[in-house]
Amino acid sequence: MMLVGKLVMNKEKNGDDRHPHRHRGSFNVLIADDEHLVATGIAGMVRDLGHTVVGVAPDGESAIELAHKHRPHLALLDIRMPGLTGPEVAVRLQDELSIPSVIISAYSDEEHLDRIRASGPASGVFGYLLKPIDNDELRVTISVAMMRAGVEELAGERIHQLEKNLTNRRTVEQAKWVLVEKHGMNETQAHDKLQRVARDQRRPLVEIAAEVIERGDVPA
Image 1 (cartoon, one colour):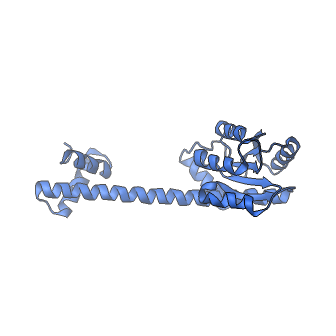
Image 2: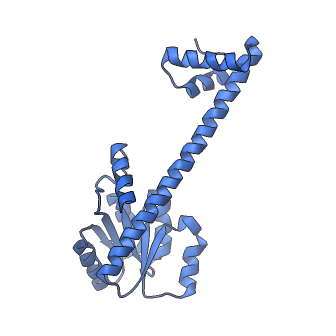
Image 3: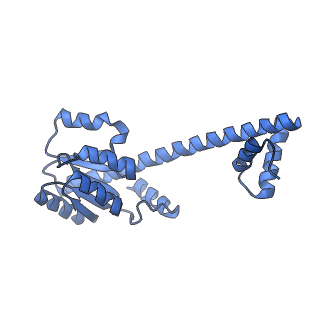
């Protein structure tokens, strides 16, 4: 849970408001199951584990609506519900809100598992529990699901940052060659020129480079 706690604190520090009520060790949980007694029992176990139940949905569409309203950290989804199935809801929650899900099911056959595997990383499923479940199984599954989701999110953020850095570097390189061709500078002189302008105008280097590419020269 240390990784999850670190991720949570970083998000709060950076002002990420997708999960405004997250705090270390406790999560806001959405439950979706068309069997009322089962849903009520799961909700009781979730609360006993120290988490908050933000809503209980009787079907897939209601689960998505509640997720958009409450932005839970995790969804516990029955695999078979009226309308959308649990795996279908999980895909939507992952795609639209980056919310991980755990499937809770009375079925363990390969057909259901294959449906989840078919979506790959986009499935949004980070755990699978067989009914009937107990508190210990639920506790461990929630912890592991949130840890896995945290690791995947951090990896995605790193990839995004690397892609952004590469794009910025290409922009600066292109701007340097604009100055080389226009003013007969060498590459080092062009780079120094871009840095001086960025420093004098107190603007990011990549922003100055983009203007050079657009205008054909450094901004005044």
